Image (cartoon, rainbow over all chains, first blue to last red; front, side):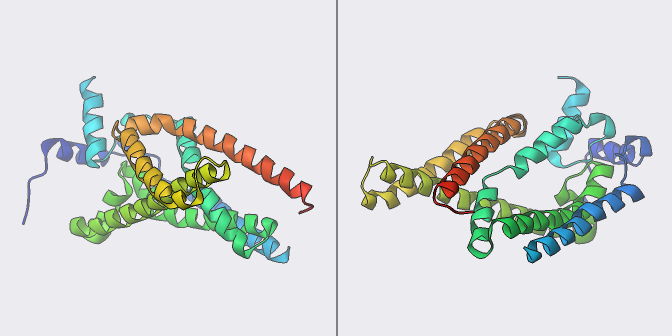
Length: 52
Length: 201
């Protein structure tokens, strides 16, 4: 089963393939910061909280 | 309205990719949207339940740690795809689940949102009824029906707000967040003063 995509959507999909039209992807530092804030910090909080 | 903004609005409404030039949210707007989403009544509900099991300090640590760990999962699941291609979480799940499979994502979002909303409507009704009983404006036996009626009225109040569209809700979010933040501060001060008066702490 195949349905034709609306023309605007098709045009938009090909536009978004252009890196200039895409948002900035997350880089290594972003992932490191994410890991720090959402893994390391909670782990420290849990340890401190359990010790109280 | 220009053709470009009309096309962007259509794209946003249909879950189509939003191009970089069409993304109007700046850092401040994103911050305020996140602030208003996180500063919500469910914080009180979670805080209340945590208080059944933990004291104030470890409970606070547990809530913050839990929220951060949850953030990791949500960010990893949605952010890379959504940021890059300007699509929402449901559309982002289509490559893995397929178009029909993405209904599962829609169901999960609806179930979560409706579950929380229903809880909040019940809390709202209960809180108003308790207040009326406490201030002797009505007898205790009327509390249950009044809570039900207020809960239903709250549903219609929310409907009347969201009826005006996502832009209206988005623009009012920061105002609501500031009001909730102010009320939270007042409640916190009252609790600390009350705790100090009875020697808790």
